[in-house]
Amino acid sequence: MSDRNALVELAGFIGRSPLASPDMKIRNRALGGMAERLLPRQKRSVGDLLGVVMTLSARTRRMAQDPVSVEIDVFAPGGKRALRLMLGGD
Image 1 (cartoon, rainbow, N blue to C red):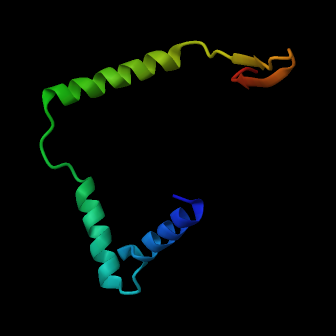
Image 2 (image 1 turned 60 degrees about the vertical axis):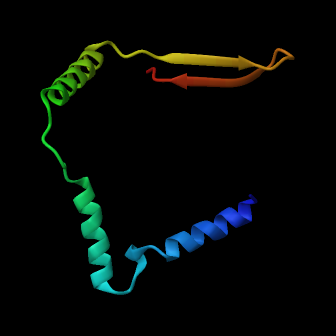
């Protein structure tokens, strides 16, 4: 598929969205449907609660660790530096 076809398809998709409708009732119905899909459908289990607790515990443990910096040097076959990437640091 060419880039042009993909852009034409994307432009058509956006134009057919109910959120782009000039009718307020259609837009409100689309927004209401989106909000309804975000609501929880069933009660959470003990396993779900345990997963949340473990996730928060791991996040807290990582936040308490000292920050690190990472440097990556990439060299071209001729020996010249092709890329230098530094993450973090002071």
